[in-house]
Length: 312
Image 1: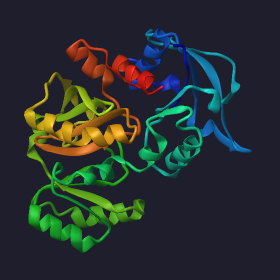
Image 2: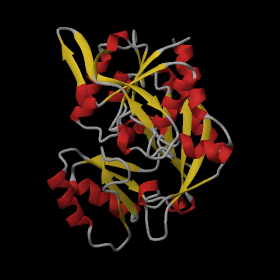
Image 3: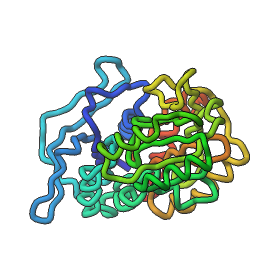
């Protein structure tokens, strides 16, 4: 089948073609003969009951410095599309939430991946709380006294913004560290939302594993090793990808959450696991496809498109 596919994403000029998951999803769609279109999230428009966006016809190629060709700007009637890939990066703020509301007018007649209503209801660090038996000791609160009590109990903790992304604003507060009070003052001044605090998991030194699930099934994983002196394993702060396989515990985690992901129309999901604990369920704009592909000689974007086409 030939499909009309629109990708809602951040500026395509700025992507890393060797790491960006949206890029290979677009390449795979193109390989299958689907028509590609592209528009920026800010172009999304609702008027007189119709959802549109000013966008461009898109051609992709794996050629550094010349990785795309975009046609002239046209008005896209998004209801006429077969598939929309919602692929802009977080932060998961009111602009992101508004986009899910607008796209919900289209779904499921136009298949939006991932389902916009469930994307809205599943922010990474909150969705995981639906599976308390799988996550590390966790506190979500704005109450300073509760944070201090949690720190007194667990001693070694991680403090981070509830709706942060990419490792931004993540702090490791070790026993004896005197900066927690100042950190809470800073967070209170920046964020209106509660703070998330978790027991520090020393297993992170061996890596923070990203596992890709397609339609609720685990299809591959990569480990991310934090650099020396860094509590975060995110690639852009120096984390190093490494080949890996799933442990029995990680298979159990995937089997526990998989049926919910499938039920909610969350076709492409990336979860983070440290040691025996599930720490995040990434549904907004998951990454990691290309790293898994390289280490395992697979093509996860093909699995994702198989799942999308099966839904249609």
